[in-house]
Image (cartoon, rainbow, N blue to C red):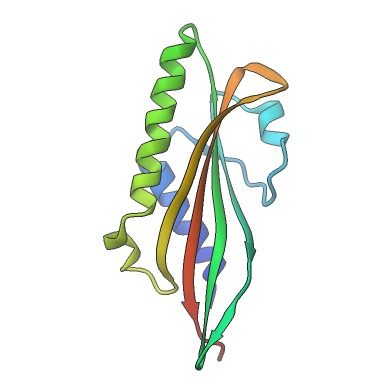
Length: 142
């Protein structure tokens, strides 16, 4: 049983299907290391807090999941912002697609709670898009 790996593999596959130039940063926590050193396209995946609930003989949990996309701006900041925002919307749509989720073992649903574009304080030419999800999982302990 590896619920967290299933979440990580599923989300990474969806992100990279939209833009295979995005590089996964490999950090587990939401540090600003990527924001300080990002090249053109980088993303991070943060799998956060949860509180499992016992339901008969199985468990249900909602897991806070976030994708952060970092994109450096080129000559046309407005166009770069808009293009990357559209990619964030497409990524969110693919991640919450129930037909894809139904093929998985532990994930039962994913809801998109917000997409937030924001500046990176240390770099005027770097955008960050935070895509927040609630990932609902069911599992049994052997």
